[in-house]
Amino acid sequence: MLFSAKAEYACVAMLELAARHNDPKPARLADIADKHGIPPRFLVQILLDLKRAGLVASTRGAAGGYGLARSPDEITLFDVIRVVDPREQPVRSDDPLQPTVYVQNVRDVWEQIVEAQQAILKETTLSDLIQQSQGLQYVI
Image (tube, rainbow, N blue to C red; front, side):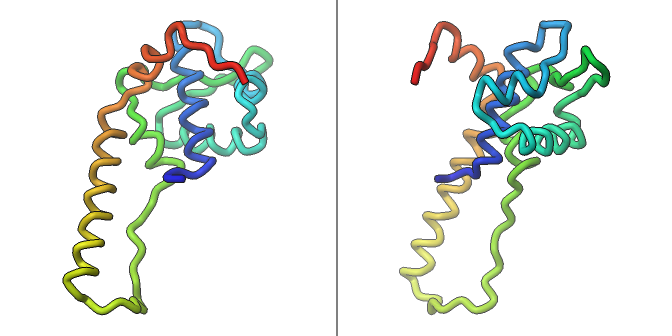
């Protein structure tokens, strides 16, 4: 899998908040967790990370909850992923491979894949995914 469970949970939670963006009531954490099967304790941490990054706003109190800090058309999947699953390029201090043309060719392909993935994430907004979801219902 290309992304961690944490990244997937974060994207699903953000889509839920995007779908409710025009609702004046904030979304309750328990509602998001129950609806999508996300462990609540894990979701709390994810939403706190997203809040610190300025993507999510929270309201305290009995009627409190979470909402997007910006419009869904201003938040991309890249914005979400880089907060919850920042992947640094690993530095290989003990690279067992010889720097041959074949090794470099394979690594060039890996880099092209990463660049293509980043481009798709950067151009896909929460609003785009909400629009794609209109009228679709997945039943398990």
